[in-house]
Image 1: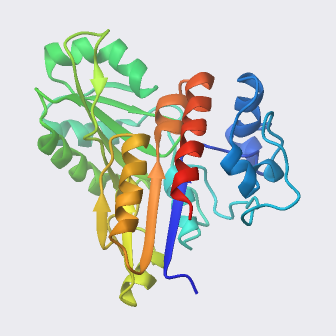
Image 2: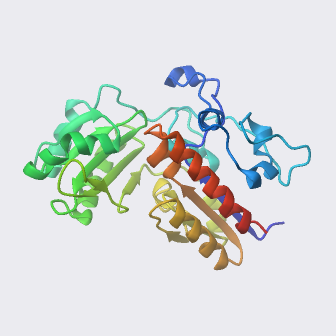
Image 3: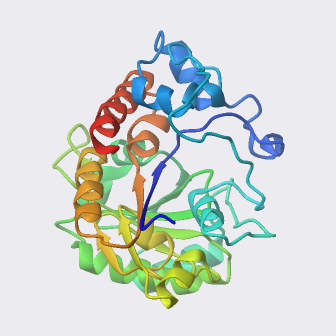
Length: 310
């Protein structure tokens, strides 16, 4: 039996469409295959040895006859397609009903509840990327102090606010209160998105993002914790499970910091689980369709993994 397990989620790194892809506009999706093709091939020697090329066809990453590790591709059983659903299922909690999404933005009762809590009507209430919304509405937010509310294809209620106008702790309090409101609406996550800058061309989101998830049902993390087995969370893992079953937590700024924290967590763990999420693939590259950045981040992880593996 293993004394220590390291589970790393490369957020947004997909290997092909699931049977229900048509419900989400994802027919033909294959992030790894498409990134490899558009980048002119990937160089992932460590992951190739582990069997990545056996999972899905990737230019530059060949299948191997004898892989260094076990490999495979799993299908999600839960209804829904978002970060919370996927992570909960990894830990053994399967959802029969998907979280709510808002393709037409949020209805009036939700915005009215937010306005009552914030003391001011929000800007936005649109579907948008986190960077584009700052370009579009950041300067108006700085002038008015009105928080920016937006969503995506996922079940998320996101609130962006400048740190000088809404210090992170104040923004967290607002989002925590909205979490209570949105439980009745089955919204998976409320996300606080602090940012800094002085104008549209230099607004930048900070590392003080915080996710407020719905309380999960019992998971493997709870079972481990009840047996006295340590669970160390790296990145947004703690937020996704509302801290349930988590013994220790390492916040991260980006993938590079996450990889440092994974190694540090393992160094301090005698027995237990390190559960990590590396988010840059999704947050920095996937939503922006940045193939070059996505490919470079994968290859950087591959080089790190070579030194990390025993």
